[in-house]
Amino acid sequence: MCLAVPAEIVEINNGVATCRVGEGSSTVNASLLVLDEEAGIGDYVIIHAGFAIRKLDPLEAQESLQILRELVEAAEEAGINIDH
Amino acid sequence: MSLKLLDEFRNPELCKGLLDKLHSLVDREFRFMEVCGTHTVAIFQSGLRSLLPEQVVHLSGPGCPVCVTHESEVNAFIDLAERDDVIVASFGDLMRVPGSRGRSLKKAQADGAAVEVVYSPPDALKLAAANPGKTVVFLGVGFETTAPTVAGTLLMAREQGLKNFKVLSFHKLVPPALVALMTDPGVRIDAFLMPGHVSAIIGVEPYKVVAERFGKSSAVTGFEPADILGALVFLAEHWKSGQPAAANLYPRVVRDEGNAKARAVMDQVFETTDALWRGLGMIPRSGLELRSEFEPFDAKKAFDLEIVESPALPGCRCGDVLKGKLRPDQCPLFKKACTPASPVGPCMVSTEGSCAAYFKYSMD
Figure 1: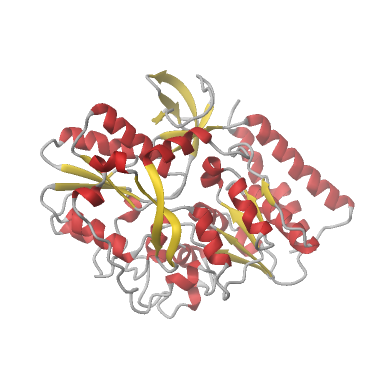
Figure 2: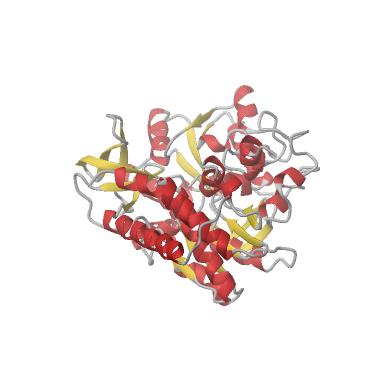
């Protein structure tokens, strides 16, 4: 139920953002009322029940991926490779 | 930026590497619980569950708001829906949940009650504006992710001067339920996956108690396979080393301190109260009710609703499933009297319920 999806802001009117979902042309409206950071056109926000609850941070996404990859590399170097 | 970056969290090689690492770490039974219906579905749907090491036991906790909505709360929803002067607006998830009298909102709707499914709380405001002769009651269920959106909607209603809009709040809070779970002597859990979007609001701080008081690690994480596997590796490492920790492994969406503005909106409208959880019973200060300042919008006050604790549904073991004491297939009703087409308990009703996910995805 706490499902939330990232969507790109294409327009902002009166504290309500029109956001593009996925690569298609469908849009959804999201209130910016509870967002505690500045959001503008082109930003991705996480939307839950008609409200943007956080801006998606692409740098953090990169960094998380990097950490996961390094974890796997370290494990491979240590000789961990199991057939499931 | 494009969202293609996020596809990398589904990269098969990355996931295989993480899975190998997890295999290398777990040498005895390791019981982890997720507390989020979206995690339940993600773990089943991605096929991860079938790939996990045999000794890794996946438990679905009280993380589906629909599943923990108490029978007596559902009775109150139905009582309201059956009034001629009321239109009930609800998230679709609640429609089929049975109350203690075996009735659901769906059945009440079929019998003529005015029940409208909305996708967001502000849609219920439009409904109120379009129906000035009726009172529109929004059924407020959900955790800390949803409560700020309902609070925000109430602020909009007040600004718009909508007098025929009310909220029946049965919102619940995740951290008190975790404490209630951990203090139950029959519960065996080694570590927790914490809900990604609840944590976007509350941050990581509330989970520290799980490590400090109960010695169990927790990781906030996202919903892609690499998110979940990375979190399990982290949890297994800390479980093995005996050093409990609370980590935020979903920083692209969750800041350690959460979303202060959302919490402020929630606090402006709601205050904590004792709440009934299906299967878990009464948990002190685990629910949200409207502050007295918002009394004109409070459906409980407007309709003088008294929530009477009703007995559990006969034979239904949802409570034990939610505590991780019983696997869905160990319930005597599972796949027999209780199926998604004809559910007895809420864990089978919600698509995010552990029984429904087990029914749909489990081959055994």
